[in-house]
Image (cartoon, rainbow, N blue to C red; front, top):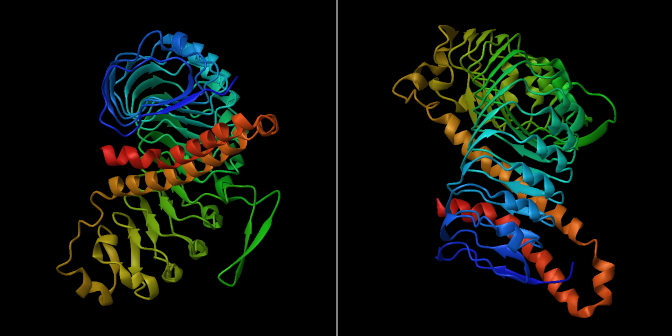
Length: 431
């Protein structure tokens, strides 16, 4: 493909239908006021497009099947519009796609099995639509996925066991607010690159697999804060785990305390029993811990006072007993963190309970969602930016021979990386 023209009209106040112009390979019309349907012949008119972004507009109608003619596409972003209907199966013809986002539309029906042919896809954002049906087993062919976000839909069924066996590069996995049921696959611990796991607000059941915290295979020793920590190929890179609002049972899995990089742990609104292990003090990076509305009992371990980064704690509505350890970091939490445990005592906290707002936990879920999303987006756009840089440097030796192409091409590389890093910020400003 020859070097063409890059058109960037993003972040303006442009209106009317999407313009179709020939002779370019990158079109960015995002964050404007374009309206009406996507032209049904867009794929036939612009078959050589490499980069198409019409996100954050006011587009309506369906995604045209002619999108399948754009077989050179590597980035397609139609997010934050009013698109309806199904995802066309012809999307499978865009076999070079690395980034695909239909986020925040009104798309419905089942996920097309033809997604399985997008073997180069690194990021798939389908969240906040009305998609239904199962997660196809054919997704196992998307072995290069680093981001899979299908949260806030109407999807159901079991979580395929193939996810743990296939998605070794998966960093962010979000199924929040669907209707998935059944247990968690034991091979989830094979997701050795995982940073964010969000399965909240589903109908998942069974116990949390003890393999979540197992250490095996290659061991890496890291000296942190004067202590030597061992990281393995298991889920040791996880920084956020949210399994709240499900039907999990069984005891609090002590193996989770081996996830030394964990910063956010939310197991609230389940049926988990047992006690909090003393080894929870090994989670030195933990900043948010929510175990509320379970069946936990026993004493609150005094070792939690050493969690110096812990800024949010909610142990309410359980069956804890004994005295609250009012030392160290535990002195920073008020009564709302412990309310609903009738057998708890702690004379040193009585004064702190009186007159304080016991509604601290209300609205916590939404706040956490926003913070987690921000963190996820930063990780995602940074990693994808780097991925595009590496992928686009392939033709370097060809371009360096042709100096007239050199500047145009690498200016485009810079633009894509900058675009990906700033895309979320523009969307947030719009809303």
